Length: 393
Image 1 (cartoon, rainbow, N blue to C red):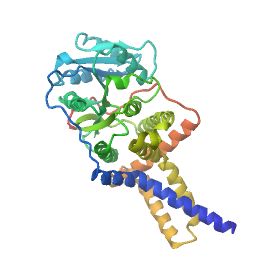
Image 2: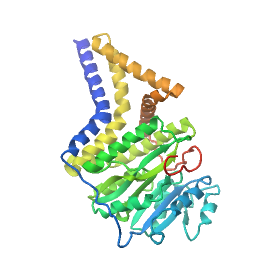
Image 3: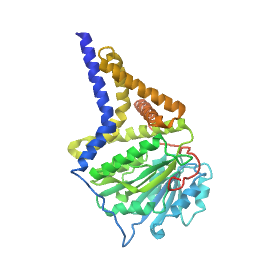
Image 4: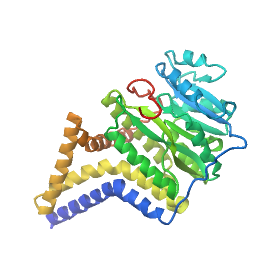
């Protein structure tokens, strides 16, 4: 009897774990696709403005002397009316030549400097206090924009239901090629496009996003700004949308170990925001968005736990049925492909390698979060080369 109960529990754990993984990556987007047949919320974009909204473009930096000049020039090259575009460089107490380079653009760009390091969001909050724009755009020094990047993004705010706008991510490595993460980023952008059609996106691209000024009034200086801004907009009865014409171009990170650390840091901060705003997963208060938030964030961040549970429960079951012998072989084959991909960099194995690496990062993020780690201060990612060409070349 006891053995039978163990086998039953293992079967329940295995199939529930498999279901969670499949739902997180396939079930949720399929559900969104089905909803699109009944529910479609197009964004009413402005073709022209009688008076262009005033925009404050905030570039957050810490020790970005290698890229800040190109970033400011890239922003000054925007085709948005210059009289309606305010450029603010928010320095998180940089210790290199970043601030000196930014000061050379006095009159065309303004530097605000934090007196001590407080983190990305603290620097952004400092810039917000002096910003005059109706629309606030946030961008990193490592992200290049096409000349119409600001114009296309601001056009979304002609729709009164839109509270914030996310760009799409265009991932460019040193040779302009797309890697396994590039495929994963395309998947994320596809998901956000579906979310936009159905209701609202659940996250924004932190390297390039925009929000109405009123959405930014409750700015948390110690929490992930892109995620928090989206949640603030939804709580105000607005929505976040993806603009597929507004792209942020960025390069690969130079060191794979730093890339893993970046993922861990991002998820630790994201979990902190989700836990703080757990009330927003209440469907009685937030309806469709509550389901989206649970599906896109919580279920995704539970995937590594489900992968571990699926492997362990499958080991208990492998001798009890040929079916579980097959599923064990499939799991072993997947992880073998991932390890081979990580060791060799083979193009055909990049996606399983990336999925395993990414979920390993999420698992480590949970461990750090449970241990009490909270991250506010950040070091910019060490990306390959200078600012990329806006166009992925």
